[in-house]
Amino acid sequence: MQLLIVSMLLVYIITLYFMRNPLKHSKAFMWRRFLSWFPLGMTYAFMYMARYNLDTLATAEIITKAQKSQISGWGFFIYAASLFISGPLIDRVGGKKGMIAAALGAAIFNILLGWTLYLHLHGSELNLVLWLTLFYSLNMFFQSFGAISTIKVKSFWFHVRERGTFGAIFGTLISLGVYFAFDWTEAIAKAVKLTVTGEPTAFRTFMQNVFALEGATVPAVWLIFFIPAGFLIAWALIDLLLIKDSPDTAGFPKLETHDASHGEDHIEIRSWVSVIKSILSNRIILMIGVIEFTSGVLRDGVMKWYRLFVNDTGFIVPNIQSNWGLWAAVTGIVGSFLAGWASDKFFQSRRAPVAGICQILMFLATIAMVLSLVTGMNQAIVMGVSALVIMMAVIGVHSIMSGTATADFGGRKGAATATGVADGFSKLGSSFQEFILGAIITKETWQYWPSFLLPFTLLGLFFAWKLWQELPAATRKYINDVENAKKNKAK
Image (cartoon, rainbow, N blue to C red; front, top):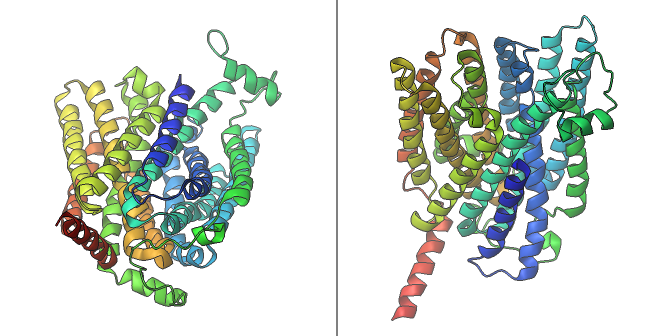
């Protein structure tokens, strides 16, 4: 059933892409653009599986919550810091090379993570947490190439008036990655258990046969790292064959996208120092960064902790708990599509108003979580539904701000660097919440969880309000020209 739902979502995404063509591109252009963004996006989705698979070690009690937080916290910090290198690099070499490097690098270090776990489970005295932290941090260094490579390619292929829809597509692919990361990884972990209750599933039988696990004395949990690595290697080969960085490299005329790089094609790419300086002195990019910091806190503060909360407290909504990845994916897809559609439909491609509405939803959901834990009223259902509302809203924020607004204000030439700064702030938020929640959460202190998240909804709302009316100058001029042309035609 899960695979059917995911397949239907993919069909819907592809159908919507071909139906949404406001600039009347040719069919040949639409197909060639699809062959560039779809494999790119699917590679990024499977990178999520190679990123959040670590959390399964905590739910399987191979490592503790505190150890998981330490490993993830350092990994997210390295991800954030590396974006000051990877952003300008991708602006120079292009998104195709960046994504291939991201996929292969993440695959290599997932293999090393799996090998480390294999040695540990077979009795080696190595320091498990130390080596997992090292290899996971290096995995995250290459993971940092993924989002910015996706946005870099998008910035050349999509006009600014189409990017709200692409932001929705980007958010959908992120959400599918969450599904792969949690439900597929959990299914692998269950399939390699030495004993099961009831009849073995078809997937368990498949895994046992393919990996020759019959008669094993140790559960092959290391496959939660090896299998995503295999997917990434396969997608890297597909990317090599199909992706084109821009329309003109695919035999089409150059597409003028009317973003912040409009009219700057004659300007040479600047030095790393000047690019970083210009991005860090751009108040709009920095405010987007603060919003993204709050989204990192809220997204990973819910996505990575809800299952642990249920395990400790027993406040279970069975359908949500057993299908956490699928529910997170579906709500994330709804959030990203509503955000992208509303941005282009109602706010003239302004991204901040939609982000502000999403922050209000997260505030209300977090308040509900706090009140539920304090009063003891309907704790399981309120906590489960509120967590899904936050996932819906926060993916909407992340897709429309990191996936779209940064490309608008950074322009084609600086898309990767601008996105890198915003995504870096997001991962700093992820790292921050890991260290803090890992230090304060025990079985007895879960009441601090939503209380910690609450202020970040208000911080994000404040900066979304500050950015409410902002548009790149070229975008504003383009919209005004279109409106004036319509008025003149009406006369």
